[in-house]
Image 1 (cartoon, one colour):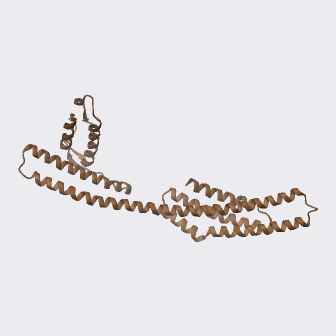
Image 2 (cartoon, rainbow, N blue to C red; image 1 turned 120 degrees about the vertical axis):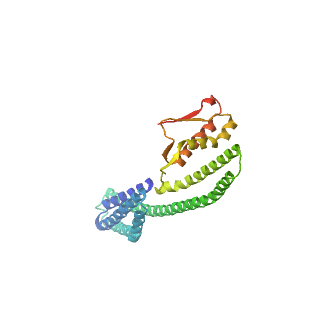
Image 3 (spheres, rainbow, N blue to C red; image 1 turned 120 degrees about the horizontal axis):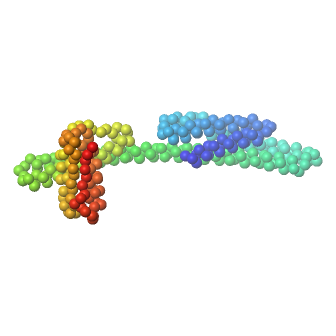
Length: 299
């Protein structure tokens, strides 16, 4: 973006310098080139401002306006005509200098030639800058299309992943519920509860992945419903019981007596937060006074 902005600024500056140096019959042509480039610079700056503001509609409108006005071709044609006029003027000057060689000093002739050469160089620079700017605008348009395709591909992937993952998860949870309805002893029932709780937790994680799209669209919502806080921590403790036992750790939690048993909020997101914290604690706890590791929930 900065490179394009510098190119636009240089284009306007060179056009101004060209107009300032032009004299005689080429002055009108140089002023015309300067006016066309001023229009083009203004539209280009609007395009850059719209891109910075992520205003795709304004970007398209200004690019279409630039294309309809066909300012690039107008600049090119006027610069080519200016070159021809300058060459004619140079030839006329040389002819006049030849006729009046005895009246002109060497200094004046060299100065005239260098002035015209400088103007020709500036006209060439403007044409080259114009070509580079048009190329950069086309590249920006292609990048915008590529970004749109990438976003569409991501949305399609999330939709497919949601369907493919939810189907086996729902089956796992469903069979867990069916197994829970059979005759089980206390230990088996506890294991079934852990399986069901883990299945629901994995389903919440899948939903959180889809929530990333909602966050981008500004549609993410937080639930407000009553739930049993003690039951939530009991489920979490059972969920990690096997892992904690394998590592030889102890998992304890304490809830302030002033906090009621039933609260209002989003139990799914609260559970996911504590699952992430406890997972990291188990992962990175390898030594130390393991019996003292606990967390406390208070106001």
